[in-house]
Amino acid sequence: MINLLPLMLERVGLLLIVVFLLSRMRSFRQIIQHEHRLKEKLTLIAIFGIFGIISNYTGIEINHGITLTQVWQTDVDYDSALANTRVLGVVLGGLLGGPLVGLGSGLIAGLHRLTLGGFTSVACSISTILAGIVAGLLGVRLRRKGKNTPWRAAAIGIVMECVQMGIILLIARPFEAALELVYVISVPMIAINGFGTLLFMLIAQSIVQEEERTRARQTHNVLHIADQTLPFFRQGLNANSCKEVAAIILRWTHADAIAITDRNQVLAHIGTGSDHHIPMQSLSTQLTRNVLEQGRLLKATSREQIQCNHEGCPLQAAIVIPLKVRRQTVGTLKLYFSNPQQMDKAEQELAEGLSKLFSTQLELAEAELQRKLLKDAEIKALQAQVHPHFLFNAINTISALCRTDPDQARKLLQQLGVFFRSNLQGAREMLIPLRKELEHVEAYLMLEKARFPGKYSIRLDIEPSLEQVPIPPFTLQPLVENAVRHAFGPSSRNRVGQVTIRGRKDKERMLLITEDNGCGIPADLLGSLGGQIVKSKKGTGTALYNIQKRFEEIYGGEASLRIESDKHAGTKVMITVPISSHYRGEQDAESVYRG
Image 1 (cartoon, rainbow, N blue to C red):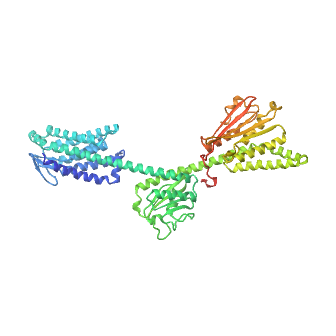
Image 2: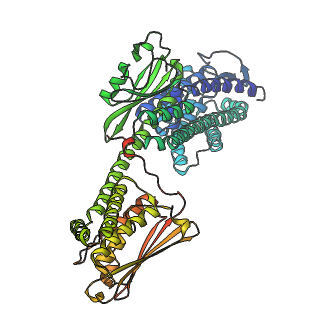
Image 3: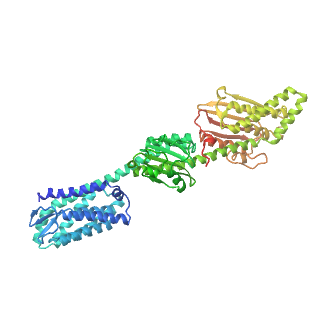
């Protein structure tokens, strides 16, 4: 019995060598870790069925308790039996592939054992088939519960080997020979097959864990690259942004060169071959044109397939992936390699992941452009609120003053120039100093006060340190205009309209308060102002709505607009904006991808 242990261990070692070699094959690794379709199940049946056949051929012949060492067992005497690792392969097949794989591999190994002969051939065949089916059912159950561990697999292997000993005692005849055989082989076979099952499942577990680590590493690399490239791809496909992106990808991949193109020219090429793959030149490889036309990933494994026109180009392989915006191919990402062996499956999967992320980033860039254009339209909507009559009335007022008070007329002309210059500046810039916005307000009020002398007055109470704090244009001027046009109605005819603008620092924020002593806002409209455009005889609330929307776009949740108003007691609008530059910087529309 003890002498049989090292011989059995040799047989298990042979199978484990085969398993280790299989584990280096990517196809086998994929079969081990993924759900199995019929094709994969048939492959597993063949693999573990062959394991059983090898175990039969390498078995150790036992004759009346005597061990006969023979290298290859092709025929077993009737009064002899085999000690082998056949059940090991069948149990493993069932645990990994389920009942179908267990049954299939059990049939192959069991029927083959039947052909070798011996007084235990029938019992061994039946026990092998049964072990495959039972292991398959237990494997499914354990996987569903997440308990398919190597130690449980080893326990199943031990139990199946014990079952085989029992079947030998039940079926094999003569009984005395069967009992003597079980006494000799039971402990070695049970121990070795359980040990072999444990080792194999540990190998299978390491395969799965290694693949998971590889995928996690690839995912980390893709997300890291995407995080670093996002600020550049937000600018769209242009030479500057693509150069930075290509340099980042080159650092985080095994490629020898990275190139990015649009539909017409090479926008960036970093790495090997930069001497002739020159940015801003027309596309030089047919492979790139094919990807642009077909809209799918293409690979080249030789210099001829790349079809670079430059003689002596060192690039020997390439992965070219389309970059898409709204399902339209707008460019390509190319990973070049000097050695085709470097272009493995991992690099291809990494490239595909980057392609999808970059395509998404380009779509976001286009969406950002549309958002910026929308904000520009909102600015223009604010400008359009300048009532046409305001210009005509200002000109008429200045014209009348030219005869009666030329100096005042000259000052008003200057203020009219300041007013419309501020309008133009607001259309071009997303942020201006508070000082500039106050000049806009003062110009507007001076022109209005010239038309209605003594009716309005303005008081500014701004901390000097806040004058350079950037704010969106048309933030205060529309509020003052609202007060002039709507707050001072007929009920306030006998009193001077007072508009006060106060500004103070509150930690890292600036608080601006625009307050008037007018007629107030009806309670039924107060809750809607700023959140939506409303219908009213006195106005629509467009100015407040646009200010609020621009705050959301520029500052996110860091700025606020709040309105307080009481009937016949005036209105107070409180604006809070961050003093620091932690607002969302806007990209120049010219640099954003235009689709």
